[in-house]
Length: 343
Image 1 (tube, rainbow, N blue to C red):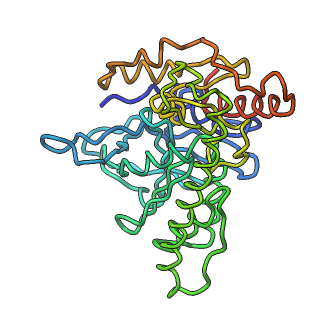
Image 2 (image 1 turned 60 degrees about the horizontal axis):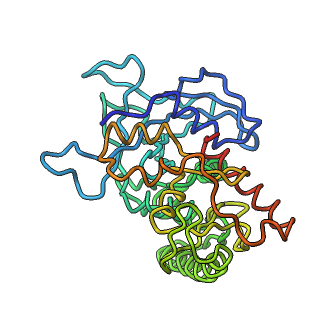
């Protein structure tokens, strides 16, 4: 399956990093892109497009997605390696379908043959799209995969570097990333014998916290929009409260200014940043991703997204009556659009 153009991948990477980030490589360079990231230091990014895995005979393995490692100039039947000297090196994928990044452990892929598949499960992508942060159990050489929203890329870099500096592997690494879940952080256990129970309880705690937050938040937001989808105006008691800044991302809030009432279809599309809403309350569709999906996947019904590009959404009740909430919502919308790399 074809990949997103390198320039689009680079724009997604740049949008997800702090504004003060300085790149030392060109706007088309993603294998690697070298940058100085505030709060992290020198980082070497290797970034590929995440696609459904259709490499097996017949139907693809259920729920598998992958990146394919090929470096510029690498020829078939030759080996290549990821450079790890002189900068902190990360191996990333970006999913055009789910609108999230995935990270693998770069040191495990320092040498590789031409075009190996590096995989993750679809449920990891789905969880990250809905919440902003998802951690998979160890798999293949005890590797821990992490998926996250664009706004969580700086947090991932800091968390991953700390894990590497402490030499955390396998279940200890999984526990570390779970403990650093944004807005649900917890201390790590001190004894190895407590590790398995800790991981299980952390997963349960994070999931339960989200369910409680979502239930209360959704009711408040739906009322603020008169129980109608703010995009398509559908009003059939099926609207949901969507967080502008995801639940597991710094700056998230359960106050109504951080919410938009959406039908289930537009909620999924918004969570995956297929579109954003700008501070003027206008829908802005990610055209690069729409073009990619039209070319590579079934896109029947895509008009539910594209027909609203540039249209103004329904404003919440507080928009004219509460200046503090309006300004908070504008900041949240601006942050989300910038992180998604959508003008």
